[in-house]
Length: 86
Image (cartoon, rainbow, N blue to C red):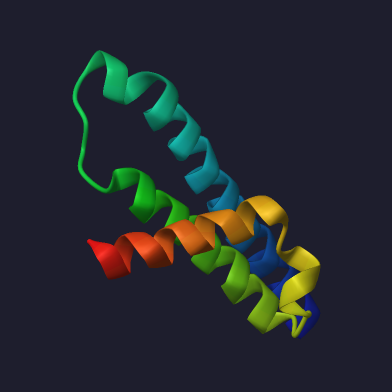
């Protein structure tokens, strides 16, 4: 029974991460050009995407490096430098 709950949570966490990624693409490609720019929305969506992926890794006790691609590493570095430098 516990495995079923974990697999559902896994699907939910990864789906939320994919949703944040889709929102980033939607915002950057269409919304900010047509309507208006929301300050730091790209940073917030990217950080949310990363947090769900990291949370998924922690639940399943996977190595963090297995799920981290170069694109996610770049987003993480961007998020940190944006927060630190303002």
